Image 1 (cartoon, rainbow, N blue to C red):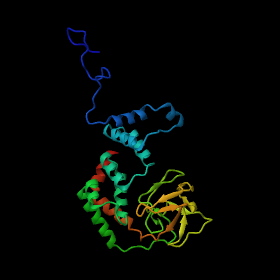
Image 2: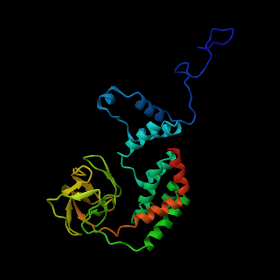
Image 3: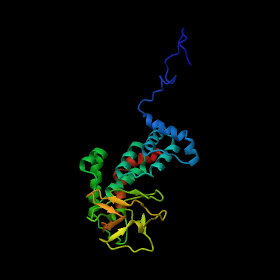
Image 4: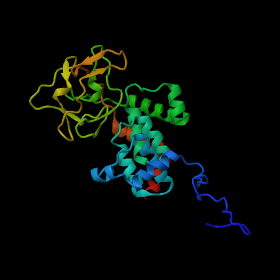
Length: 274
C-alpha cells in the first residue's frame, strides 16, 4: 500500500479497507451485489445450472451490464426478465432506461391494443410522459377508424375469461405454470382447447382445466380460485364466463404506426446492440 512521505501511516486511499471503500458515484449497491451473484455464482446455483435472482436483481444486472457494455450479461438479464410478467408500461419504462428496442415496441403495441387502457390520463402522463401519451392516443384513434375484422368465435384468450358479472379477470398477461412462457392478454394462438373437449358458446362457462398452452401443451394455470379485479367477485374451481372478444385490432397497422412515430428512439436502441 502507498505510504505518506516521512511517515509510516498509510494514506487514506479508497479500497484500503472496509472503512475506506471504493466509491462508485451514481450506482446502487444492490445492483452491484446482483451483478456479483452472476459473476461469482453460489455453489447451489452452480449445481442447479441456474441463477436464483429476484426480478429487481435482474433489473440491477441489466442496468450495470448496459452501462458497462457487458453484452453477454445484458442479453442474459433480458432473457431472464422475460420469465417474469412484465406489464406493458414496465416494458416501456425498462426499455427506455436500458435501451431495449424490442421491449419498447412490444410495450407500446400492447398499450395501444388494449380495448380500454388500464391507465388513467394522469398515469399515462407521469409514467410514460405527455408526448408519448398523446402519440399513443392518436394511434388508438386512427386504429378505431379502420375497418374491423370479425373475430373467430372459438378463439380463447386471457381477455375472454371473465367473472359472472362479465368483467375480464386477467388485466395483464401471465406466465404459463407449466413452462413459464409468457401468455399475452390478446394472443389468439397462446392457448387452445383440449381436443377431447368442446369450446362453449360465448356467455357459457369455460374451465381452465380444458385449456392448454401452445408451447408445452400443459395447463396454463393450476390455481384453484381467482378474484375479479373489477368487482372482487371470486371465480372458483377455475370456471369462468366465456366472454365474446372485441374485434381484433389491425395489429400490423398499429405496429407500423408505432414504428413510424417512435422510429428515432427505436433506432437508437437497436444501434446500441449492434
